[in-house]
Figure 1: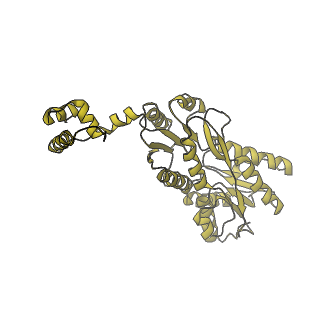
Figure 2: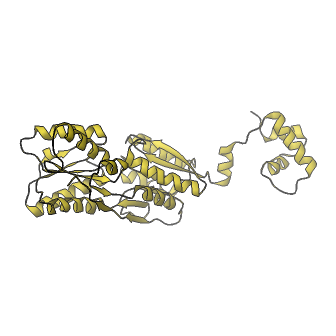
Figure 3: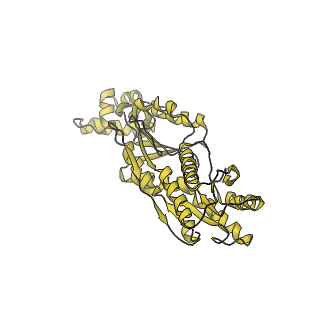
Length: 320
């Protein structure tokens, strides 16, 4: 592979002159400029873009750590990030992790080695302490509520959103309430459980673990939840479902099993995805595109960390 020394030798100019020509530097005679470009063409020379990035200290690339690209929640976040990246003339590098801590560490090492200018972590498996070790290498933005002032975050108040949804069901006369969730140990998941427990205590109802349906992420998981619900001796009359895809699966399976929604089982979803609009699912609208845009903006703010809490609202349709 040719380098600028080879170009200089062929063009019969100095290495400095070649560098100036390649970087559009003024004060190079037209004769020498033409000789350099002729040599570049003859040797099919390509710039080492990594070397250029290292010399400038900037790649104009932001890494996006994302567990699942094909899930609507993360797709909407990514859409917002991508919109803002385009506006600011940045490229994105996707690092899909499937919640594997090793892959998250690989992304953090990319920041350390200046392969990206910053990282947006949409959801994580790694402990916060492990991430904090990398904040000195560049901006890191977490899409979750974070108390540490050294790292930026953009989030929904999942405790309040879940509590408001629970209270709405209580106002509608429900006391036997279950919920569907994917991961049980993530920070947002723990906040939701806390809200669930607090409302149950207020209304004097016990927490029944069998009414918490786990590993719920896709439509087929919602279908499974209904079959598990049917097997229960004592059933909840309402379900909070932490994403609309699963809520749609619940609705579809209820129709197959002649379960009347909301008379037999009331449903509240989360996110206000397109499928919730199509099936008229009552849902807690989360501004995911706007969250993605804000996360990208924070990634460009290198000198200050901030925490932005995004608003949410209940969209009342026909399933409560």
